Image (cartoon, rainbow, N blue to C red; front, side):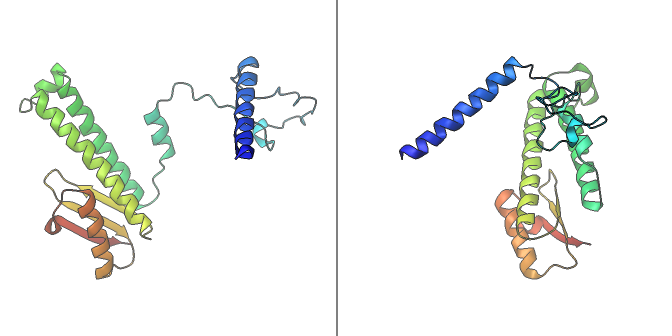
Length: 196
């Protein structure tokens, strides 16, 4: 038992020492001078990113989390493109409902039929659908399918598309079970299709 405590204490001390060194020696920018690494010289034209073990800090500047997420999501194929389009539409819907819920005059004027509390309820419902879609897609992939795409409508219908050459009745039953456990859909409102 004492040996584990000593190891944990040692790791904590190393982390503290690294933090102190980071604080004392700048903390922003490259971890070493371009003309040398603590006595080791770099060949001219060598970038620190090419040096094994060299720590290079990246400053993302003014990019927001959404811009970074969009830059990282490069649609390649049907499932990626459809997921990206679905997420864009849901983001727009969330923004509009949030504006109405917060009492934005322009949004309220554009949507006369919704009150602030109704918009809040719909916003919560959209967020829950997004989370359920993501969860269902992840669980389907864990069952051995290459990719999956789930659309949940506000009327309770769920469309599931799975990347597979064909689906057996057992595969459809597994997928339907996942949907039933993670949504409020009924069996007759679930549609499962395969897409190559």
